[in-house]
Image (cartoon, rainbow, N blue to C red; front, top):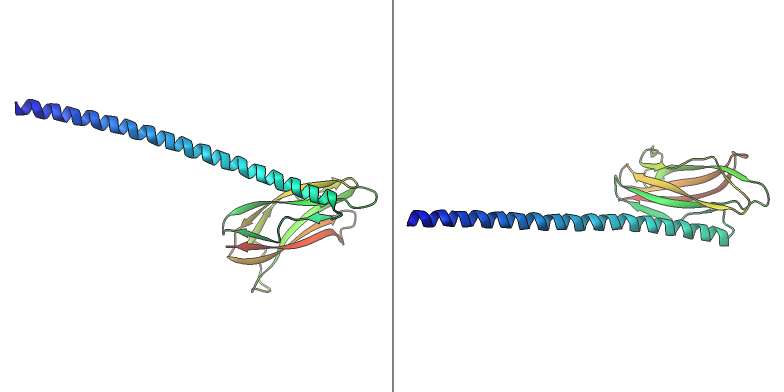
Length: 179
């Protein structure tokens, strides 16, 4: 009788183990589906925020008489990470098209005067040439990558009129803080 009893118990144990494994895989699948949905929603939210920032930049340019607008004075980026930013350019000339190119470059690192910082912060963007009609404004994307050492970097952003390349049409400086 003991032999029959132990065989039945081992069969019950293996059925329970299979049921637990099936339930575990089901819960795991549901959890992965939830995480995937949340990450997809986060990407959509980021895209919507970037579109709203672009729209705010364009609205700022249209209501004001600024040639160049930039959303922040300091950009904080973790070392090795990237951040997408947008700038706005407006043709404030009285007549004629504005033909221009964009130039973004790192000038120096705080506390390291004279050091070569050209590769510490990288920029990915369309340089141009671009054309804007009188009173037209447009937003342009720049991907900033903090590839160098931690610290604060001074960056120059110039809008160079291609018909008069000696003098910038507009320029602005800002900081990239690599953390």
